[in-house]
Image 1: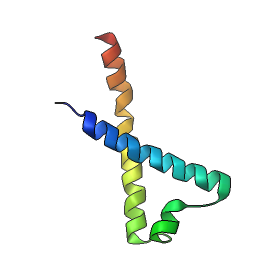
Image 2: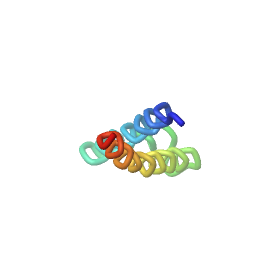
Image 3: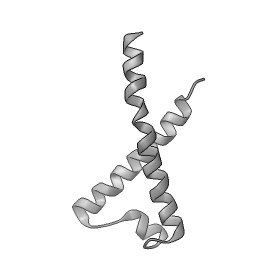
Length: 70
């Protein structure tokens, strides 16, 4: 099964989350809270999706290692 589409989608979401953390760290500006409100249901869903995306991206390490061995 080819999961490249899912990989790219979740990697993009994780990168967007990383940019948000950079904004928080450097400028104390939370883009998600700005767009969707401070800990509203929707902003919590966005944070959850970003977190799950990051957890999924961990699996890329194993698959990259497997590709290098093949």
